[in-house]
Structures are given as structure tokens and as C-alpha cells.
Image 1 (cartoon, rainbow, N blue to C red):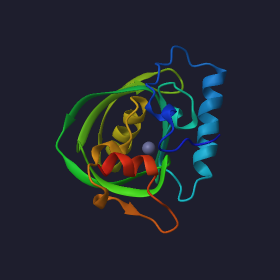
Image 2 (image 1 turned 180 degrees about the horizontal axis):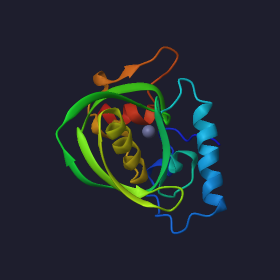
Image 3 (image 1 turned 135 degrees about the horizontal axis):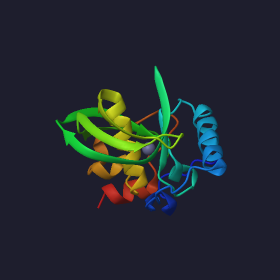
Image 4 (image 1 turned 45 degrees about the horizontal axis):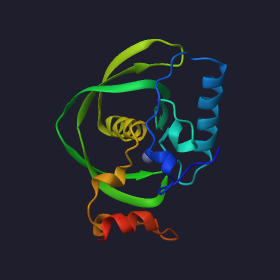
Length: 167
Ligand SMILES: [Zn+2]
């Protein structure tokens, strides 16, 4: 699967809720994991919209935990925490982003089971970042000056992002 990058209008689409988890849904999730596995550096989260599929699913893979979440929704947020973020759709670009420290999130797993869970730390951050994607939001939307971005060697800030930040 191709990962769409900053500037592509598909990333601004709102993802639709998944109504039934069928074979096709499971195949998309599998392909998303394969796609994320092939990225360097390896991504820790990927929303379906980033591969051009506008349905409310994202996957995550942390050191000791991975999964796919369907129709996620944040019910409660508390605290604030600043942390460095990057995105497979904005490769090589990082920025400190303020997120809720703790979230209560609900969603559906691949077996169709509803769940509700409280999250902290990196997992809470990844979930907030990915759920933003489902609403057409990219992490750099929280930035209003170019200076806060860190650019990894060999990468450039996308032109569309420069245009947005330098007026
Ligand atoms: Zn992202």
C-alpha cells in the first residue's frame, strides 16, 4: 500500500464508521500492518486514511503491544503533556505536540467486541494522533511556526506545510 503524504487532499477526508467487519476489512488491516512494517524508521501507528482508505480504523505497534482499533472515540481527556511526534505521512519531520496525558477511549476490536479503556503515556499519544487522522487532522496542524519543526537529514519540510506556516 502507498502511504499518502502531506499535501494530498485524501488526508483531509473524514473517515466513515465501519458497519461490519468482513473479510475485506481484515485484509485492509493486514495490508496496513505489512505497510507499516516496511517503513524506516518503523512507524508506531497508521490510520487507514493514510493508505487512502476512508474508514475509521487505525493500527498501532508499540514495543510490547499492538492492535487494530475500529471506530475509536475519545470519551474523556485529562492532563496535558508535551511530546515529540512524527507521522508516516510527514516523513522525517518531528515536532513537540501538546496532548492529553490521559484518555478514556472506546472502540471495537477485530473480533467485533466493544471495549472501553483508559490510556496513558505513549499509547495515549499514539491513539490521539491516529484518531485525529480519522477526522482529517495532521499533527502539524497544531504547529504555527516553522521553527519548532525538527527535520531529519535527507528530508525536507513539505512545501504545502511551509506555505501554511510562513505567511
Ligand atoms: Zn500520522
